[in-house]
Every structure is written in structure tokens, then in C-alpha cells.
Image (cartoon, rainbow, N blue to C red; front, side):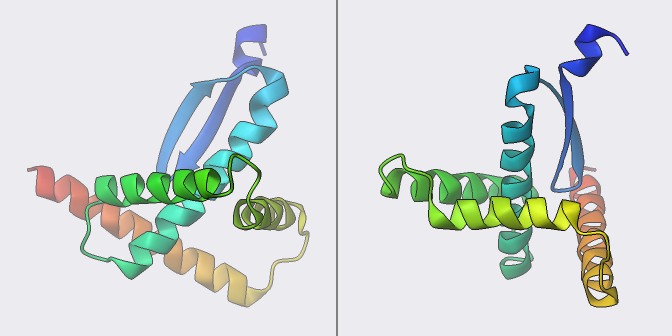
Length: 122
């Protein structure tokens, strides 16, 4: 792997894969930020099924920034909880069947949303 390849981080947000340049010392923070944003998008999408993914992404971004600003730039409890949950999920060796079923259902929902978005572009 070349040195340049080590500076690339791959994030999957709302079912879309992004390859981003990021210095190695900032990669873990970027990955956590991507996981938090992805969770917010999924949460909003579940509540607003007919809203286009672009608008859902904007709402999720506004939600995160609003929370950040309302805490006067300090790390918010909710963001820290989501980051901790994301880290716990990655490090958990045994995943219960219920979590797997929920994850599969979310993935299917996101794929369906992506396909509908693509069809609406036609």
C-alpha cells in the first residue's frame, strides 16, 4: 500500500460510499463523524419516508451543527453517546440476531430509497 493510499478514508453514508483524503492522525475522528451523520440520516429517514435523501442529509447536518452550537462548541452528550455507541458496535464480537435483523432491514430500506431516487431522476 502506498503512502497516498494510507491517507484515503472510505466512509459509507446513507448507502453511498465516499473516498476522502484525510491525514492519518485525523482518520478516527472523520470515521466517527461519518458514523454519527449516517445514524442521524437513517433516523430522520425513518421518520420522513417520502423526503428525498438530499433533504434528509441537509436536515441531519443541520441537526448535528445545531446541537454543536447550542452547546457552545463543547462536545455534546448526544454526539458523544452516538460516537461511543458506534465504537461499541464495531468492537462487539457477538451480535444478537435482533440487531442483525434490524441492520438488514435498514440496509434494505436504504437500498430501496436509493433505487427510488435513481428512478425519480429518469
